[in-house]
Image (cartoon, rainbow, N blue to C red; front, side, top):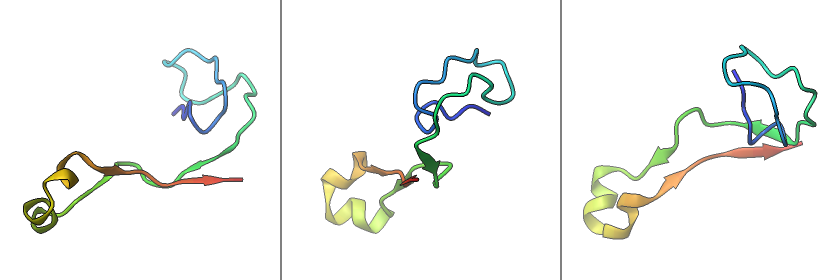
Length: 59
């Protein structure tokens, strides 16, 4: 599976199972899905409804 953001400028077609273009890897995406605010947080803080937390680790 391609991680275009993590592999710099990946030029592989998206139907390939993994990156073969040799794009320099700059980090790893830690979260598969973005973390969203809990229902309680959304009720207390309306702006948190659109917030999505993604974790990216630079290497």
